[in-house]
Image 1: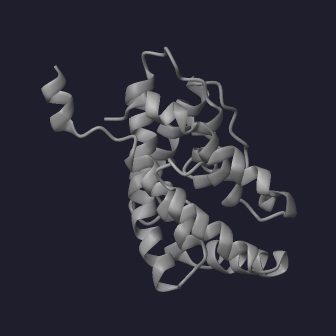
Image 2: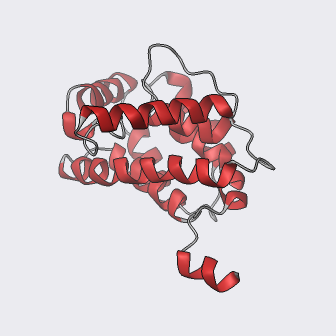
Length: 191
């Protein structure tokens, strides 16, 4: 189950993660982008700080090359969150359709050229959607977070094996999401 208030308080960081996981541009690495989304109390701060430092040690051309090599040419490091997990086409198609409907239900128009399990799109949804006060939010956002958690589990492992600078970004994302998950035991005890 997701703590919706905690998730809402971390919205800025989801926007940051989304931007960092799209094709890199110079403005993506402006110091204000980082400062706006993170402080030392943020659950992913240490990892995202390491990512930020690593990225500022290399040129934009090198970052773009690493991004392309990592996310465009490697199946294990795809940014499509259901690609490696849901191997049956029918099962994956159903999840893609479910996510698309969910986004539209909260007012997000999906780009026609993108699949609904594209990690930057999912993070943009967490950043931009207004779910407060919506009775569908708990179930819907739990699904989105679950798909991201499942998809980034193998992604993190593969990035670690490649010693990729994106390892720390994905680890920070996972730490951020983990801080919003309420254990079922705690939920039961609160009833």
